Amino acid sequence: MTNAIRRFTTAALATAAIAAAACAKQGPATAAAPTAADAKKFLDAVNDDMLRLQIEGNQSGWVQQNFITDDTEAIEARVNQRVTDAIARYAKEAARFDKVDVSADERRQLNLLKLSLVMVTPSDPKLGEELTTIAARLESTYGKGKWCPDPAKTESCMNIDAVTKTMAESRDAAKLRQVWEGWHTISPPMRSDYARFVELSNKGARELGFADTGAMWRAKYDMTPDAFMKELDRLWDQVRPLYLKLHAYVRLKLREKYGNVVPADGPIPAYLLGNIWAQDWSNIYPLVAPKNADPGYSLDDILKQRKIVPLDMVRTGEHFYSSLGFAPLPKTFWERSLFVRPRDREVVCHASAWDINLAGDIRIKMCIEQTAEDFTTIHHELGHNYYQRAYSMQPVLFRDSANDGFHEAIGDTIALSVTPEYLVKIGLLGAAPDASRDIGLLMKRALEKVAFLPFGLLIDQWRWKVFNGEISPATYNKAWWDLRLKYQGIAPPSARGEEFFDPGAKYHVPDNTPYTRYFLADILQFQFHRALSKTAGCTLPLNRCSIYESKAAGEKLNAMLTLGQSKPWPDALAVIAGTQQMDASAIIDYFAPLDRWLDEQIKGIKTGW
Ligand SMILES: [Zn+2]
Image (cartoon, rainbow, N blue to C red; front, side, top):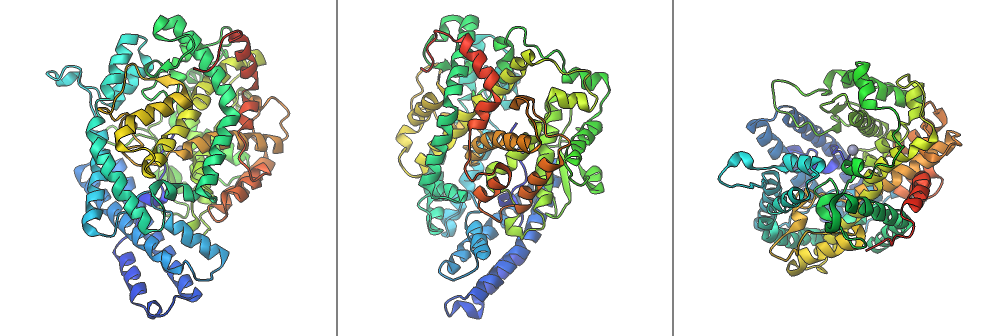
């Protein structure tokens, strides 16, 4: 699951910050060339203001998501606008110190400040307002998106929740296709807005000295934008052979189920993979489940039978981190978190993790059900919380993960340690199933994590080229489907000309959230898992390793978390992995038993499309 956490960019900044920025401009330093002392003074002021503003933003965000009303939404929107404006002003002001000789730490803070926004509004107020308005409209067009099979009957209308449910559960190819095509009718109205959005946000990025918005996003990764793109290609090449086998096997099984609508050696129809974007295939597990590979237990059933209530599930998650040597969660965590859906008000149930005061007021917000999925999600969310607490001693500008992939990867790393053996150790399971049952568990995990990789990669491949002009509005949709074919090996049910705008049917495009972080997180979690398992002394196959109770692994993990964003990410990676290079071969190691099994299943069958 990709769960939102409260980030820097959506956090708070208010009137005092604006005043402070104005002060700096009027100060004596602006007349002469700025000095190192000015830079230090500027950063001190920014760190102070960012802290206060982020707290204000977190508080208004927390209240809005826990009590959804017109008023809390208005307050939240107002605070966010102030924060974004202030950060933009600070980011532009940081450029004043580009040529000043400052310490490495200060240089890093100045750079991070310039990179802290995903969208920069042009300084021309008219254009700035136009961009903000378009961005809000894109998001709300998506949010209100509904497909109505029968426009005369409003009760037939499907929002994204209904669409998601049908895609997950229906096995009726005609219906799946209809719903898939239906959902993609919400996005054509976004097309012209998106083109203008690209123009204006590029203008803002150029004012900060970046070639375009995509180049600004890629500059966050402690290497040149081009080197970073090459790095992603290298990682993808490492996992592509495994993806091709999984793709060929799934295609075979879908052909057994749906017949000729699935080609024997071509791309898989996008609407048959259990998810509207074909980014996570785990919903079609029953169609592709290996025979005789049922793990023999159901964590869903165990949680229900043993009456393990949501609070117990969170305690179990905490216990895992405590077993690694982390301090217990603070009392306020238990008092202030949201654990179950309230009966009397509207809340945002999408799981998230918060640090309201950036200094240990950590919380999760979830509507926990007694399911294995939520049990895993708890471990994931707590990973954010322990990360946030570990870096809270850093300067405010360093209170974030080493790169944006790291934050999402930590909790998932821990979730990989929730193995059958671990469940035995904590008394939830009598005995672990033997290794022959691993194929079922691995298949399910591969449908989620391996199937996701090409999708996680291509969203920004498309956007970076849109931002740099290689893809023009005249070829938005063609370029989108070329990439989906190239990376995912999937195809739309019929020709998708430029009268459509299919990228807009994926939330992160109209919402303008960079997506490469999810690809990186998917790679990093397996690399972390392999390195920490080794530290923990695990000699089992990687998919059976759990770092539960390993103080040595916990120490390494904590050492990395504590760094926050203070060092380039390769340095942080090296603390755990012993190398500065990302390495997707851990995925190959982890899925090795499945890889061998797939070889048997697809013997004599052509892979690829
Ligand atoms: Zn998350």
